[in-house]
Length: 447
Image 1 (cartoon, rainbow, N blue to C red):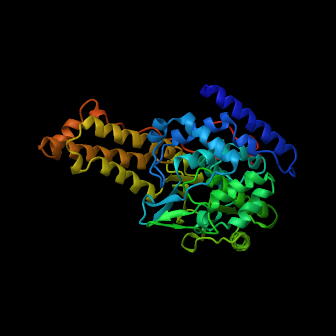
Image 2 (image 1 turned 135 degrees about the vertical axis):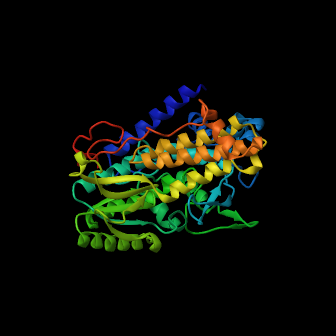
Image 3 (image 1 turned 180 degrees about the horizontal axis):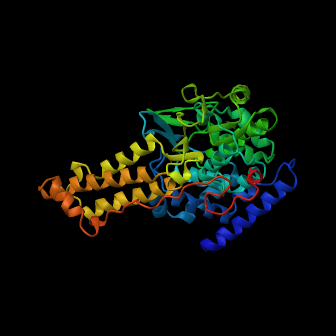
């Protein structure tokens, strides 16, 4: 089946499920399993898994192995196993990856390719049902939502006077969500027994670490295709409770959140309410990252979604009367950018062509700047541009055995050996204006 036809059919299925869920907030869906088995759904699931690439699971089968084996053959086998009720997901392979800009490591669980396809198919079917319920305060891992939508709320609310901020994230969130309560949250909308059995099987499949399989009664491990959706389904209970018991404006991006408040007292009440609601969910805020910050001139500011946010006054004489919430890449984000550039220009890579090295650096810088350009990031972009220039100059000088000065002279040529500059690519955010540039009509209404 052509890719366009597959996408059209699955989108129509998703629209139908979304409209049905939106029309009746109390409806529980009982006939979904057959939709997970639909060929167009599975083909789209395979396409998503292939685009996301990713490593092999514990069976060591890569995407290339699957393509050699035959994608149609794999999908036929999955349909047969799912229909017969004999499908059993393999344990995920556990790896630890460093968190950018810090010494911490994040546990990542990598399911087998076949299990990622099944998770993607399940997500395709059930996501629109829960999207009909999710609240505007939730931004992470949602269709047509982005980190910049969440960041815009901070700009808008601080402009309206909410400059006391509760900053926190949920401790070990993806590993701590209780399976039984998560399945209960899914059951609020889905009563198809076979879909619920599939969700339980995914949760109970366990992870292999150090040669041993570990099973747990908590967690929807990071790395699974369906894990972000399932985490949002559970944390929707926090969003829902906040509507009646919370204080201030909640902004949640998966397990990372802030609450914007008018006064210190309101912020203290918000933090107390947050602790209580999370405890009821079997979760808790991470102590090291939980604090109340006052956004004021000369204040310390806060980090959220990779940006550092600080209340500042305009620098030019024409703008000295204006104070606003500025943001730029956080220290960890800057360190991550330098590390990536340094990794591309190490002594061990001196045999590589210079244009290959600059292409790698350019690819990273375009992606990094594509995110951070929506901020007051000009000085930081200049710093990263200069750092990349100096690293490439050093690399060229060593490669030619002529020293840094020769490298700088060569890189300063008309084409800078292909190295891009980030100068002039930033867009400063404005209150009550969508970050894409269009006016944010009504402001509060979109939230």
